[in-house]
Length: 524
Ligand code: ACM
Image (cartoon, rainbow, N blue to C red):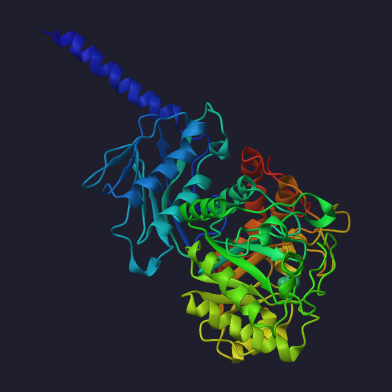
């Protein structure tokens, strides 16, 4: 039997322990959720002044034990475990979980949040993310990561209090398509490098990764019915390096990884121009019937498939059939840009027939804005990069646009004249220029209703490694992600640059090699 006095001592010690824990986790300054530096800027934020403290006993609760919820909870735990060192067990619960936990639920969210929206409620007792679909939970998790101290992104245990300001965030995107394009042809990037790109861009709620898989300098994905494309056409890259290509197994692994991050891969086979790697691999695809040499330079516009030969359409069908079978998303990108040596009268029937091939495979064609010179099939999407006239032609045919205006969204452009890598043909793109535009008012005749979203494009003629990818991508990409996610009335450069400056600590914790633009008040 425990004596009464002993019992009351135990209780007192427990009470003191609880109080100490609360005090020890108390933030130095009062919290204000509305002053947090979330990128992209959420739609509505209401603060309570309270805070939640993530402690070592916290669990991640899910409303039921489905694979979908378990895997998203595992993803969250995987983000939080390294820096906290907490076990963060995943448990199913019926009803509301007890104090000190995180709760992910697919019930109770407002229908107006759509598929990607979420509500994030932080009280002293509980952090709740509610959404209609798991994509919404994933987006809520990205916001939650940004509300924790920046060291949450470190890969080793940090001795810190993990508090989160109290209140409610309700958020959904302005545009459904928020993408980044990575050119893996001019220089090849490995599966691990592409996975890191997915990790880093998904922090900012980017939900499409367009892979530019074929060009004059290289063919980067195995096609079993045309094996030389990868075996021979993938052998080199700009500058004469060894190049490379993904086996179908590796490509499948990338698709799976992207899917787990709610990123849809959009594979591009550029045609009828930008095809030298294919033309070097198979003589029959050439007008002359003779194979070309592999190409390691950076000129554009000199190659074309033989658009009048039936074998070319067999090639297109085979390639897209194999790619479609590895593609979980709706889109296949058909390229179509800068086909300067394809006669217009050959180009038009070609892009029309290629769209039909893609549609027959159950997929939706996307092509660069030039494809609007032909008849766009219902549902086809034109990607505006350079010609407003072409973009308007697409709109007048009733097609939707993906907005990648080179002067804003081509993140292979230099920041300023001193930037060591990158191009300048579309102008210098400082961080403010990439941010300060509205897709819906950029071009006369192109409105909100014509646009599915935006895509940043990273061409890699001048980029040879991950550090360089990161340098040109960060910090422009978070701004472009905000252009796509946040409603334009909420966006303002002077306010954004403060939020961005506060992301330096996160970039450092994630070991991102970012460009420290002088326009941004960095807080390290
Ligand atoms: C492009 O930049 N040629 C689409």
